[in-house]
Image 1 (cartoon, rainbow over the protein chains, first blue to last red):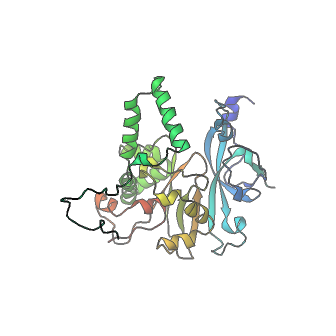
Image 2: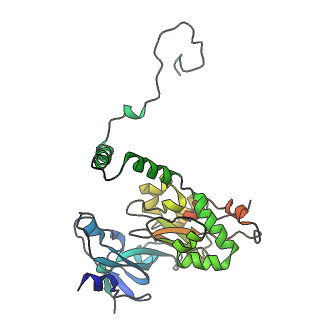
Image 3: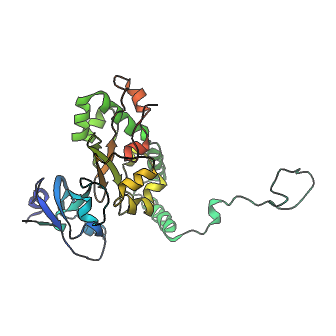
Length: 102
Length: 215
């Protein structure tokens, strides 16, 4: 895929169900551990930004990646969450950390 | 208390008094030394000047929560501006000659159904251009690790009790966005002039750890 095509591709749309990859790569990763392996719903596409995992090591320019905000119910992230079921967390996550949930 | 800690006459005695330590009295740690070295090299190589560095720090130090408060007050007073602020904060802030900075700022609106609060669990991302320097507690591991999974308990420690009928929504500022909360306008302040409204709106309300009250 060309860099230009990559810069505009956005495989997920608001409302899509996604799962955060369960992966533990070394290096500078901006996907919090607590959401890995959990399912959420895409809230919005934030735009396309340099991949921090490349940027952190001076590999520039990097191909821009789609960045989303994903909403998770608190009870899905923390099984012992004591608050109301509607309470939620929204996290910015890059495209390559998300898998489609059928 | 030693005999010399209290008020006493400074006439004719010659013993030393303890000094408050100067900044340089603590050992220079690794990262501050690295930052100083990098700054000196960048200046030496002509990437920027010492005055550029000073004026940038000076500009950042001039940013205060009053800027965020002006935006929130205008949003309360003008529903059309509120819609523009929520849709595109950079363009809306430019109408008031306010610079939101290089990172996109998302404004999250508190409503009767939702209370929003911001954290950066991974480091300490913060909308410096609209709120100034972040408070120490925002950067603490205590706040960052607890507000994400026990937000109601942490808010209660700030004196903020959210009705269980309202959703508490925590925004984890993990990547390229920055967040400012648009608080709910307190009852009885409808029609107030914007500067009077802005005076009610504090840093903590714009982070989401409290609500705004009138008085």
